[in-house]
Image 1: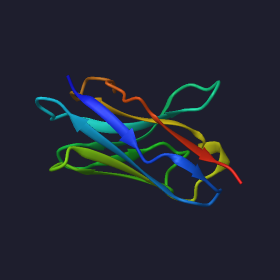
Image 2: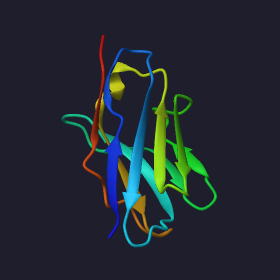
Image 3: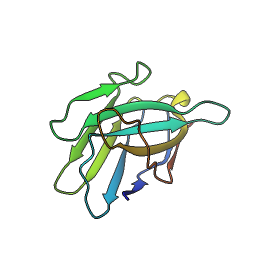
Image 4: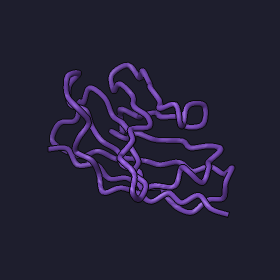
Length: 119
């Protein structure tokens, strides 16, 4: 069973940047993909970025494309989300999750880290 721990959230002004980290632990860690999702109060969870673990192919939601960058360090079993040009509407709890196989959905979500964008 993989365990995921997010960190790096906080309060930032509009236009600012944050970098989230997600460290994975478990007996074996070899997912098909890792992803970041977010959930704002009263809204559905939205997967904003994903990366194929083995060869690094990335995908982004239209709402963050060009501003967020997902990356991974396979030696450290860690995935990152670099968030630039942050907007008030990016305020949410951010979670990282694992997608075990190509036909699986994302799951094993961590506890989340709060990102607040406010002036």
